[in-house]
Amino acid sequence: MGALAGEMLPLDMRGVEFSATAFFVVVCVNQWHQVDSHIPVITGFTSAIAFYILLGADYFILPALSVSLILLTIMRERIDIQMGGMSNDN
Image 1 (spheres, rainbow, N blue to C red):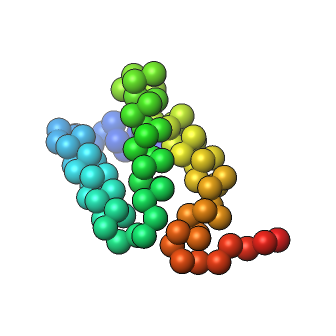
Image 2: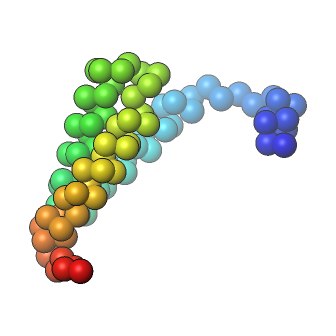
């Protein structure tokens, strides 16, 4: 239904790429300044750059997000400790 409505409505999507990039940069800078642990920002940036180089602009986002999620899940306790929290030993 949404695809049909999208085909019928004339939308000018020029500039969306710039807005999305600007939003991403603002979120990353905000994360860097407000959170004590920089591991999430560095992990996301590194995986995005690595997969952009390996796979190109059309195919990098899903692998980069997947690897970031996996790495951050593995490093969850270390991030909690850096942020002053206690890790859960279940």
